[in-house]
Image 1 (cartoon, rainbow, N blue to C red):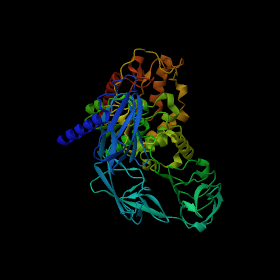
Image 2 (cartoon, rainbow, N blue to C red):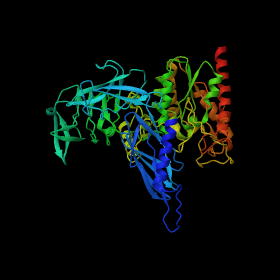
Image 3 (spheres, one colour):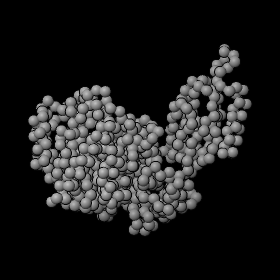
Image 4 (cartoon, helix red, strand yellow):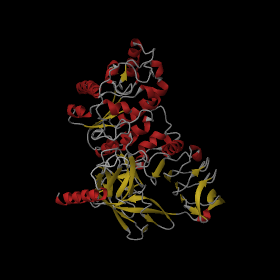
Length: 602
């Protein structure tokens, strides 16, 4: 404390010497008002030109260089502060907006507490110093995002494919940038794959790039070099690898486009790519019926960090940590994020852990449910409440992936590699859409956490998500009962055909049931005035009986209990207010207890 006081006194003294006054006001009114800003010294960073003089009311920027393993958290400036980070996270521009007074500003920085040691394992450090690099992380997520690696090590003639807890690759594998559970003394070894012989590729030179047009090799694994003939590989043309017998293909970082039919009718089973590939479609892999696994390595800084899409991986981390525990998993879209007080469920069912896996209803539910199922065991409970306004996705009928699928995977691409691609459509088209969507987005870093922001992207003082995965920013009741969007939803039998929606969701439910997982169907909340004209009381009763008779799992709630006056909704027609979420949770707890009691009597 004594050192800090002396430091502050010194800088205030310096400020007074520089300015000759305490504020911005000048004694002579005809002179322009000036402000003098001093960025204080501190541990873990250096400021270029820390003393600045500007016009009152204007902006001022400072360049800050962080020491290794340090993170900039913010400043104590009372006004609006903009923080712009380079991709490496070490160089930061701090912009103070509309400065009106002379001030001494304190920078808040923190050194990471969780050390991971990276071993080049046959490669070389890009800085030419040591073959081992130590990086410390803040630990803002339950598991740690690893380094993308390409800025750490290189090895001539090899592509960095990922990390492993053992040098020989026999331990736990982790993709570049993907997450791993931290433990003291953790060492990750670089995993290298040799480039396929350049003589096996047929290519031509186009505008300073190598464009691959054919392949003459017979290898089961192809690792495409980043350059051919001294030119960077940019494109793989139509039919270049058509009808090949290769089982694994590794696309090098820097490849920009894979054209249609590039791998048509090949025996490809798994594909590795890097997330700077911009153009690729499913036509590139037409008739590749054995392709089942896609590995994505991060080479770009994340764009969706802090976004609600990013909550999926934090929720998944919690679910994964409870893989061997008895649990209740809540699922649908954002109505589940907003719609439960999981602490109440936790208290009502003390033998179970609770995980809220709701994120976004307008992205296909099937891949999300498959990932959830992989972390559940016999005796666990899945409580599903599909949102009817996104029924084709929520009832697992839509097999086509979309950009949001990959947005939810961005902070841990390894999770996506668990999915069997043969169950889905438009996988690579969706990846391109994802790349297009984030092309102009601000790039962040993995330390940014969704709980630091509200639903609209504004920073919050208290976490916006609790440990269960509920969105917990206080949401007052509405003053109006009227619908928000004016988009009426059908609560009619005809809107949910058996051969599409019902059969699709029953198929997925059966997978859970086959593992001994209990599955219960309840209803997502909805403004009762946001229904279609055909959704009469009589038709809603028919729909409820229809679900009870056609679904292969118990419907534990009454449909009418899910319809709320607009007073208990917030911002949309299916996001409950804080009080509304508590009311709904009480109903679901009651329904679940009654269902458990019925089963005990059998």
